[in-house]
Image (cartoon, rainbow, N blue to C red):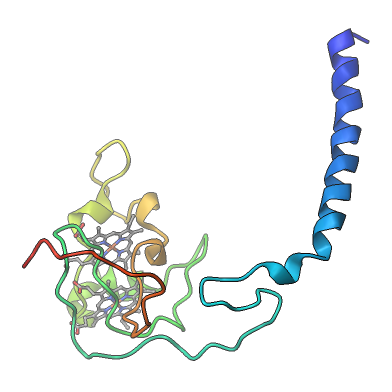
Amino acid sequence: MKPLAFLGALTLPVALVAGLAFAQSQVGTAAAVESLRGADPDVDVTTAPVFHQNKQRFVRNYRLQPPLIPHSIDKYQIDMKANECLACHEWRKSGERGAPTLSMTHYQDRDGLQTDTVASRRWFCSQCHVPQADAPALVENLFQSSGQ
Ligand code: HEC
Ligand code: HEC
């Protein structure tokens, strides 16, 4: 065995044991961790649905803002294989569904090539778009719209 490989073989179990000991020492202090709302992360909280229907699309606060979703999305599945948002928003379907078509940026891959189907980097819609919600701000927000 080369000396370096031997060292590697030795350090891995040592690191594992050290990690385990550290994890165990943390168990007792978990209750001290608080979320921004001051909630204990160990306790499951039932949350009311945050979506508040305004029946209208919100004005964007800056030109490239992903628009807020003006409808509930609880029932629409998005995973590796399925994306139910596309049933209404994909360019082939949006006309008959009366939904806004995905803009061109959703049909451009990372090399700038135009695609006919939604680009993989735009697949997980909720990564950028969130439903409208009437949630109190957790921290002070000094943002000012560039549109005013
Ligand atoms: C059953 C059809 C349908 C499905 C499914 C659907 N939408 Fe929509 N969506 C609409 C319609 C219709 C509107 C336009 C509502 C309006 O103009 O008031 C809309 C509006 C939007 C907007 C606002 C666009 C803007 O310019 O303001 C976004 C963002 C959006 N949807 C995202 C989503 C996402 C993300 C999903 C999946 C989680 C989804 N939608 C699933 C029909 C649908
Ligand atoms: C990486 C972020 C990102 C992802 C992922 C994403 N979008 Fe968007 N979306 C945006 C941005 C930014 C805009 C506004 C600028 C633009 O049109 O490109 C937008 C605009 C839109 C619009 C309005 C188009 C218009 O012309 O008014 C709709 C509808 C929409 N997105 C739906 C979706 C749906 C449905 C998905 C999932 C298939 C999705 N988006 C995925 C960032 C994203």
